[in-house]
Length: 248
Image 1 (spheres, one colour):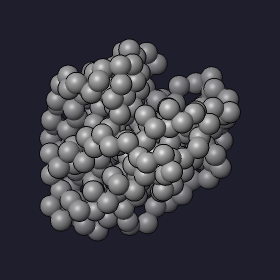
Image 2 (cartoon, one colour):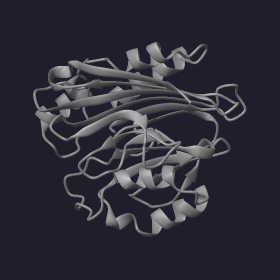
Image 3 (cartoon, one colour):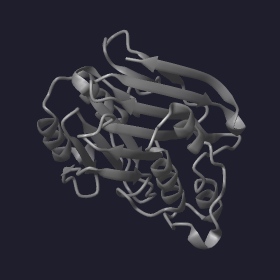
Image 4 (cartoon, helix red, strand yellow):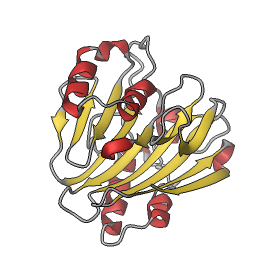
């Protein structure tokens, strides 16, 4: 997952609104959004190579999502980052206890940003400092750097989300995630991957022959605990492959 914009407003009739793109190589095998047969009550896509996921919801109001940190100098971890999301969604460990455990072994994974919580609280954890942060009400953005790092696509997507919060609809959330505009060269971050790759990765929606946005997700959580979860999946050059809509 490479871009998440979300509104956390715990006293609102819709306490959590999420719009997120997962960017990955098209060749990596993936299962679209569905209820997991081996974990009833968990709804997420699935990375069929390592078994984890990038964003999903579970029982008791659980929510979790993940982005990688883009840093070529960061050592590869021996464990898959996707398990950080799947283990929380399938487990029953209290949120803060789970975060403390993950923080203590963050070095086992490649660089990551982790969002997770329940109806009562939402937390952010970065592998850079491994210090869990309880989030106050607000609108946030997360890409492949720290929370709210002002990359052009993050600023653009956050602004688009803010414009939809009066009456958020899945179609509008998915629409803001389809923006293919490349950022101007002068505004690109320098994460060590070279100008050509920085440019490719600078759009909200990424499309190329081999790598790009594989899934766009819109999640609306209501105060009564019900959730409206929609996912569109994509292949090479951004061609749409499928769509899933769940009300759970």
